[in-house]
Length: 365
Ligand SMILES: Cc1ncc(COP(=O)(O)O)c(C=O)c1O
Image 1 (cartoon, rainbow, N blue to C red):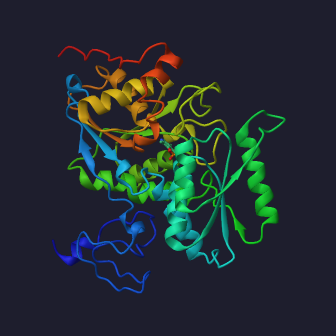
Image 2 (cartoon, rainbow, N blue to C red):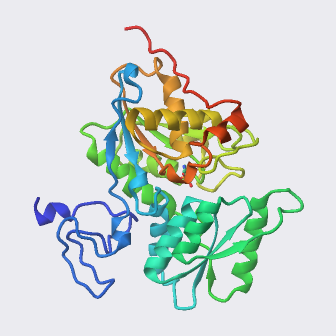
Image 3 (cartoon, rainbow, N blue to C red):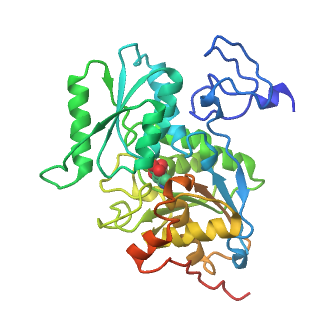
């Protein structure tokens, strides 16, 4: 491959690549590129350019050409590495980051981990506001990266929700902590841009023909908005299926949910209903069933929202005709769900049994 063609890779942030591998000029560690293929100047340059898998064994009776974008391959374990890096790079480009800066973020999941990784790599301080519902594993991961943990002790007295209490704590810190900066993934344009120019652009660049459907699970709606923008950028007829959690206010109504990642309790600024052509709601049990089918049939150990996507697709067999090209973004890896999704006793406690994937029979030819 020529040096020139290597230079055309999209950057994970949507900003000009400042330290990506191969041929980009790098100065972050006092080193100067170009880089030979496969050699990376630092961990951040390994974010993005994840594999696109052909999922030939997952729903074979569908007759679809089904692909999964393996965001688990990002170094922090999820697609949220991309918005984390994009938002920090943007803040850097705007001159908002100085020696006194402390990034303050309310998240106990993948974005917090992605941000902790970026902050460690760039030597930035990060204070993560979490609540007691954070999983022990995520707490340990955040501590391992060196993030400071700010645990809110009680839910918001008015709403009874931890999210509201965490948001208030972030606002307090931004007002009182010298150098505090909140990047706010729920409204920051770097979030959708990282998927528009990264995740989804990579899918569209890799497939020989554009997919008929892109399948995206939703929470902040950064990836959904990024997908819509990428499809519009290229003038494609590709349609978008949003997969949301039952109990989320985005495409359904508020209700109890067990599994983290997808779904939302409040509507983020990135959301608009018409970003998706269709939406599917999936339960916690659907996510478990889909995850277990994905690992059994494809040996992909993935997170809960990936299982939700699989369950939604299993039901669409017969509705989308044989030959349909389908590309799904698979947001994260499964290890963080070993005590829930992949734990039989947990499943029996919550669902009475280990859920099994429900599949619509494909339409007769
Ligand atoms: C596992 C997982 N799935 C899906 C989503 C939804 O992605 P977005 O925030 O882009 O809507 C997230 C967001 O954090 C996530 O962590």
